Image (tube, rainbow, N blue to C red):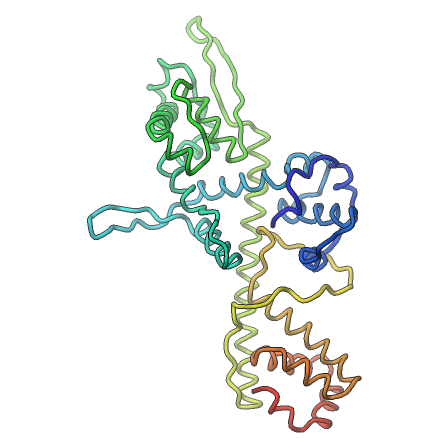
Length: 369
């Protein structure tokens, strides 16, 4: 979910104290040319709560940094995920495919921004971090392993040695890293400094301690505990949202299958699967409900289809009071599968008015074609 404008940390207290709104209200405002200042605050509050799954406080608003932090955590999520399969080309070269969570992000952006040619290319950024070997280092760091910045020890400790290899790879491929990750790698910087730059791009930082060993002070680095706890909470929330979305997707498939079977049995009509080329979500219901979502604000397409059908069914019921022609005009603006969905929902929600519709327009089946 994209913030209304970046850098919205000038008044975190006002954002945290703004009125709560639901998703429909938020979505409907995205298409408006102008929002009142209080509406901007309300939308920003919704975005932050929806993004992190946490109570919105001034501290969280400031930490979010106008949406910059969640983009870093999403990159962290991608590099922590298990890589996809290995594909071998005709020339014998092996290529690693990105995790599904990364590939789906690229796919959804291309579907959402069909006429755009300047997409994010998240798979390319993931591949660079994968080639750097960041995942193995991150897994050790998340497990509590410490890294020492002292050169004599660096080669003796496996994770510290991995950090040094990352630094060497980074310096050899500095132009590519600049082009892909937009990160400048000075040739004279230490391995820990370079690692710190990569961690910062993932919403993480390090903390250190300096115990005395053999009469000498040795500096050990580990991940900042607060960063780790926060990132894990957000990643767990995003995983939960994915699981819930998958359950809803399966339920919607079952509902659509049942609906198609009903249409076939009652009217002898075969109903296609809901189309993925759908318009935007219909206007908001003024019921004050909080329909919190998640996962960058992207709703399941099948769920959108049913929400739209229900919305149009309510419109059809209301329009019946103005005459049959008004209902026919509404149905003429819909696709065939949407029209049948509206009729089914109409009959289920208001059987008495549906009887009136059939009585007043016995030719209604011809409208469905």
